[in-house]
Amino acid sequence: MKGMSNSHFILFIHINFLCIAVSSTAKPPFACDLSNPSTNSYAFCNTSLPISQRVENLISRLTLDEKISQLVNTAPAIPRLGIPSYQWWSESLHGVSSSGRGIKFNGETISSATSFPQVILTTSSFDTHLWYRIGQAIGIEARAVYNAGQASGMTFWAPNINIFRDPRWGRGQETPGEDPMVTSKYSVSYVRGIQGDSFEGGKLRGGHLQASACCKHFTAYDLDNWNGTNRSVFNAQVSKSFVYLADTYQPPFKSCIEEGKASGIMCAYNRVNGIPSCADFDLLSKTARGAWGFNGYFTSDCDAVSIIYDDQGYAKTPEDAVRDVLKSGMDVNCGSYLQKHTKSAVQQKIRGEGDIDRALSNLFTTRMRLGLFNGDPIQQPYGDISPKQVCSPDHQGLALEAARNGIVLLKNSAKRLPLSRATTMTLAVIGPNANTTKTLLGNYFGPPCKSITPLEAFKSYVREISYTPGCDSVACSSSVSFEEAVKLATLVDTVILIMGLDQTQERESHDRVDLVLPGKQQNLITIVAKAAKKPVILVILSGGPVDIYFAKHDGNIGSIIWAGYPGEAGGITLAEIMFGVTQGGDYPWLGIHKISSKFP
Ligand SMILES: *[C@@H]1O[C@H](CO)[C@@H](O)[C@H](O)[C@H]1NC(C)=O
Ligand SMILES: *[C@@H]1O[C@H](CO)[C@@H](O)[C@H](O)[C@H]1NC(C)=O
Ligand SMILES: *[C@@H]1O[C@H](CO)[C@@H](O)[C@H](O)[C@H]1NC(C)=O
Ligand SMILES: *[C@@H]1O[C@H](CO)[C@@H](O)[C@H](O)[C@H]1NC(C)=O
Image: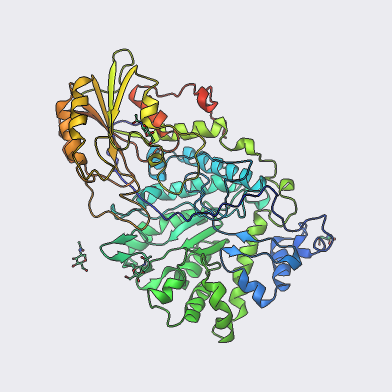
């Protein structure tokens, strides 16, 4: 926990697509199976050759239809060449997630992954090495999931490094915040960690990627759905001058590529100065690939190609949209638009096979760098990473450490914190965010290893604990339960209010319209604080900033803590912080007996 920092309060979201549960225990097929004599003689399987030659050899064997089939996120198998299907879309914002299409947690081996705090909280530690270690843990867990046969891709669409310029943005929670310098440093640490590089960079084992990171969303994206404008039609008007594009929005992307050496970039839904991001040659080819030396693949955001024709009217026909994105340098389309319209674009001679071959070259290069054309996955450089490394005591301990170091103490005027275990006899926990584990995870999460609610966590510290939500939900539209909350507050010696936002208030496709607490939350806090015997402790869970000016000046509110969305260990961490446990301890129920930092 940091001291009384002037840290801003901030927050954000995205749409989770449900994965269809398909139970399978058989290991998925892999390319270049050395035991298969019909495919192992291909030059593209020969690991003694440079990847560029192998990729060229592979592309030379493909028909036009096969080539087109590979330009979308769900790339089908090419059985005659022994090439399995590939899923480009997986997510790992703050832990290996089930939000994409490539990761399945319903396999028999791995059913959860470490869920670190939401990024806006983790970055509040201002600790680049912590960010690196989290990236590293996510990369290890991702590779373990792949080795266990539960991943149909190893390309992860994180980090989200858009500058959180508009505090109402529903996805600000996913980002490191509004500062280009912090966001740049975060991007480099995270990318080096997940891809298997060293903290200082330049140490990828033989150029092999542990997992592929993707700097998103390129660029100037911080509006989802606000006052009738959504991200599909949003046109960010950004001066190319010193101050805006070059100095604010682009530095994180430049660092992510030049220093982090990320192997993916996602172009955004929105237009920038009239041009759809995915159709902007200057942005993709001249700037990222040319000036910054990007050598990975470009993906579109999901359905960001169709909107160029459908919503933006920038392209006159679907084929024009295909031409625009392939010409700009985009390689793979999340969605199915390129599968549907590329053939007719080629037939209309508005796009030659040259751009398609370039796209395929970037795509297969990435798959080869991931070691996916080297035969049996367990014989790869990362083939020894086992399921035991998922939710390991080290990783769960790191989730605790990240929450502890990110949470911010904003006010402690009445010196209420830390609470004493010896003298805190009766505790009331009040608020709609007290009895939840889901809210702790923010968005883009996977099933956490183990998570308990803040309410449950407090039970280890006080003999007598009582709870009432106070509001019907975080929206807090009714005051019918206020009386009960006020009554409870008068009966105990300590009151902790756990309030703030959740994904009903800020999320992907939903921006806020103001920065105050939802509904009647402020009324509840004020009357409970007034009724309590001693100044109360107020905890705000939120990703985006919340205006709590009223609480700063209310003498009945002794302490204020901002806890972001603190991840799977957030409940435990909050209780520890309240009771002054700052070094971590024994967590036998997590299999943790001492917090250790074994990471380099
Ligand atoms: C793989 O490539 C190397 C280098 O060109 C060559 O010496 C070797 O014979 C090739 N292996 C196979 C199985 O073709
Ligand atoms: C929201 O949109 C309406 C209708 O387009 C417009 O009149 C209004 O000024 C907008 N509100 C703000 C705060 O921009
Ligand atoms: C975004 O807004 C446009 C124009 O109002 C509309 O056609 C489109 O359906 C909207 N997209 C989404 C995803 O809501
Ligand atoms: C906390 O929430 C759970 C699940 O919604 C519920 O079963 C439980 O009764 C709640 N705890 C209290 C003390 O209200």
